[in-house]
Length: 90
Image (cartoon, rainbow, N blue to C red; front, side, top):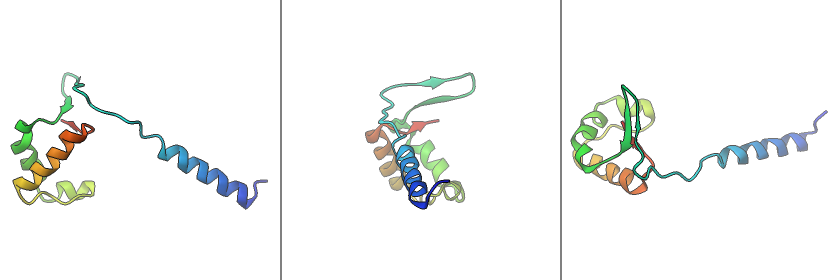
C-alpha cells in the first residue's frame, strides 16, 4: 500500500515530467502541407486576414483570449508570433 508521502512524491514526479514535455521548438521555415491544409510561419502579409479572424467576438474567447479590438493589437501579437517562431499560421 502506498503511503501519503510516496503518493505525493509520485504526483510531483508526474508534474515534473509533464512540465518538461514541451520541447524547445522553432518552426524555422518548416511547412506542413496536406491536400486541404497548410501550416507555416506567420508573415507580415497575413496581418489583415489575422485581424479579420481574431477580431470576431467569441472566437478568441472560446480559446481563452479576448478578441482583437484593433489592427494594431493584431500587429503586436503577430510580431511576437514571428519573433518567437513557435506559432503556425493556418
